[in-house]
Image (tube, rainbow, N blue to C red; front, side, top):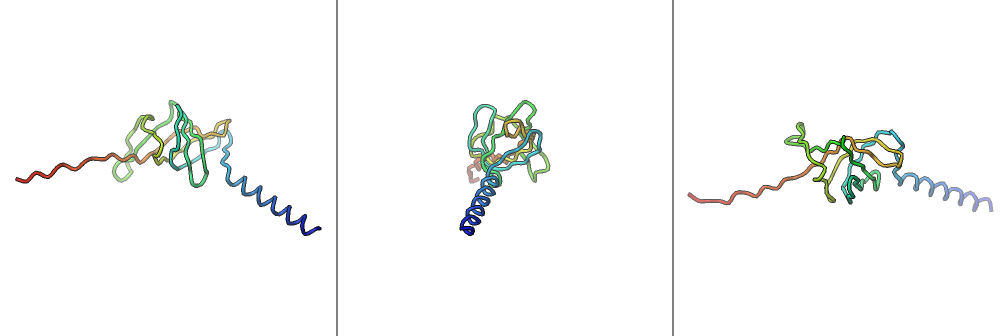
Length: 123
């Protein structure tokens, strides 16, 4: 009887640890770094699916900087927030708000611009 009780307590503790580890909760004012893929966008909020943190809600505001690395990544190009579409890989630096969301200060995305090669013209 005692072994069954110990086993059930151990299973409950393990389940609690797993549940806490899978949820991403950020407290108000805490700094956060999230990188992942945008899975959805509604107005000024993005849903980012991160390997480390799971699903995270990102809030954009007027102070959010959206940048794209140029060349080797030493220079950055400022972009509009309208280029942030689902499927894009992003890296976000921000702070938590009262609703456990991340308010983005800096959002970096490796946007790729495709350029078609010029057709070959023989002399």
